[in-house]
Image (cartoon, rainbow, N blue to C red):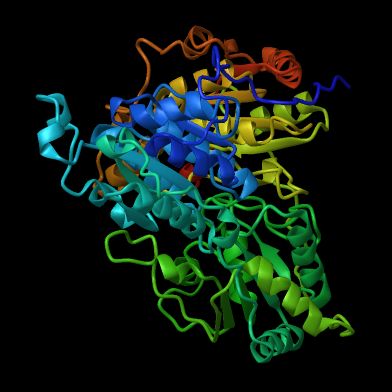
Length: 598
């Protein structure tokens, strides 16, 4: 087996010379950069902009080679998506710099994705000069907003626009602590361009972060933990819904021990990162983006349900039980309500719960294990038998998604990988996870175009490891965000991107078929305004133009294995690689039963 070398560092741009050679900060932006260096922020992704030219200068000429390392991006949306992917792997924030209102507007979709995905991120914006007397004609006026934070306030956790050097340092300190505190979400600090470039007042010192750390999530009180442990032990058919949990291997092992201790079935979700080993006997049903009929049957039979920050608990229970009362006792473990506002409906429906614990699941599970210590696993006729391996799915003349997944598994040849992206046509049964970094889920806000940036961010997080980041994404997702991959090529990040190319916005074809069937109209017209063909975009050519190695389009089954093996070896050797695979849509999950007869 060929193994790529461990990467000692991500490639960085080296300043010609360090002009200040670790001198004390002279300018306000120097002090801000110095504070960023003292925080645990290894990278700052950005697309350059004049509104933060003061900060940019300080990152280069005041910090020199100190962190955070600058990552150049071709679009602000990619800068945020890269930080998002990094946080999904590490659970820690990156910094992002966005140019004025225009950069923030570009980045707003990616910020919404990160908010819905509950990841930490320190976003630094810029505006101004706020003082109208200091604005240059035209450009400074259109790049200044009265309340720039209002553009993203409804989908960030906190924002501020400080008016002095001391206030700016406090705002960055607070923002760092707020974004790291559970539940996490992006924060935004807008820095006045004139303030950045002003001399640092002599009485303002850069604070040390040690005394401004975020609080740790609180464990449940002993009585509540005891009650939950008793409910799980006393249940005939306990079920765990493992949702938004952390990447820590110790927490993964604790979840596994909890399920084994009480004999609980576990369901997981493709929208969220790996939360439980899907090959385990207690995980009887493959995960999906939406609960499968088999998963809903398990949920209907459960008499106690432990939800570990499950995304849309109310909607999932409603799918199983309709409008009837949920007969099972429901235990909800989530602090997510702290982020619920009125603008975005990402709080979902109001879920019934007999016990609510507003804490991080990774803190609660060890407490439950302590209360279960010494208890014997109950004898019961549960869990149900694991679902039999699915028969070969209906396929057409081309390469099916299942065949693509199987060929990719063989190409990786057992090497550790991180599945950083899957398309909506992906089947959970096609990829087994056995480690918390085996898969990191979707983008949170269902914003198409996030895939390439998320993959780059994951590759950045795992660059100094033996785990190869692999992303399988649709062609629509790839085309919207392909230029994000330039950053992977620029910074020498090992990465394998496989485009499952159906040459269509195919999910919307399925929606058009549903409408046509409901209205007794021709389903043959579902493709109009959806197909990405005539001409077909050259996906591999796009990748090569950005400095990546690329293969395809692969259209024949006979060619697939060899191409994926070459691509995997190149990525293992340190390259960023794209493979365009033209896939058949006959086994697309949304098509099941979608006929006039069905």
